[in-house]
Amino acid sequence: MSINNVPPSDRRRPLRVLLVDDSPFSRGFHKVVLAAAGYDCSEAANGADALDQIIGESIDLVVTDLEMPVLDGFKLLAALSLLPKKRRPAAIVISAEIDAEAVNRWPTLRLAHGLLSKPADPRALLELAASAPALKTPFEC
Image (cartoon, rainbow, N blue to C red; front, side):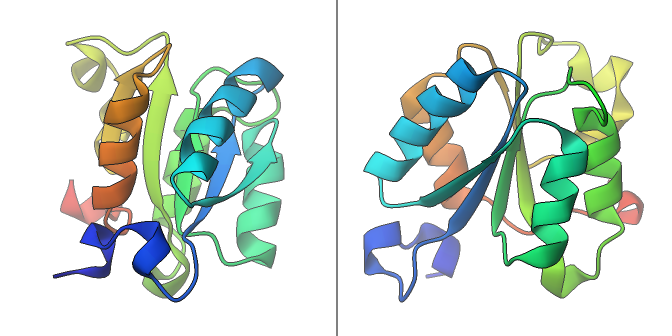
């Protein structure tokens, strides 16, 4: 059994999740869902703030919106894919822009472990979080 399939409460330390969204409401909603399941959550209002935290801390999973000021979710995913594998968190995208054709329109989304449409279904978010691998590199897409 991989560590990604072990519930957070059974791990030595809870997985660190960084919630990235310019909407405080969205960050708060996803934080309530993930924290109740045992994840250790922190927040960033844009991709630039998220990168600062990821470089300075150990983050296991990034849950990000796409449309944000300063540095958007597309550029954040691209930047994450360039990090050394040991420092590269998995990523889940939650956005109002997600639909059946999203990956065809935006190939960068293939770097994410999962895509959810806003508002995210809590059960779907928890399932993706529990199964999230390390982020793919651009060469693995």
